[in-house]
Length: 274
Image (cartoon, rainbow, N blue to C red; front, side, top):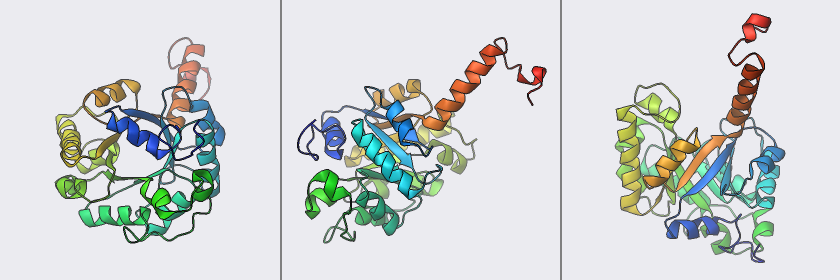
């Protein structure tokens, strides 16, 4: 690992991801909804580039999130976090704790995207308050350029309103990328809320977002439920691709093994487990 924590050769730095994107390489990552640093260590398989600690829908509080950032750093993953809301104090608090990037949910307009960017950057580029309690330690720096400009700011496009405003959002100065929440986007389109969607309307909406990102030179990101869909999205030009979530992996593994134990099918009810 590089002696410079912010070097592009340091696998747990945002600069490392920027370098991969400059080389047109997709970055695959995982999602953490369980409040466990150990789960991140277990998921840190070669080829995983980042982990996103979900503070919006996950059962993770701030103190545990800090330990999860630390676990990601220790295993060479870039620590992202999805903040609970597009609020300046929530974004800056996570960045001060060491997150290298934020994913901001439910951004519907250019003004909301600009607010998310401003919360990540120090004046005069933004409005982030200076108090790098932990970020200055892991970056070995206290200057505003290193601490503020290096971190990644992604906003989520999840609604029909945001889809209608996609060109304005994608052209927001300082924005690093747009991250698609397929389930909420599906709800906005009147479809069932799940991942790996194949309905033509959803496929067209996702492509519309990707194309807008490409036109404005920012990274297109998306949530998937499988490596197969992740590979497909990479081939279509997406750069930040989440291929699985810890809680879903645990559920799927448990379900598979109990079905096998019960004779290869879902026979749990037949032996008294209801």
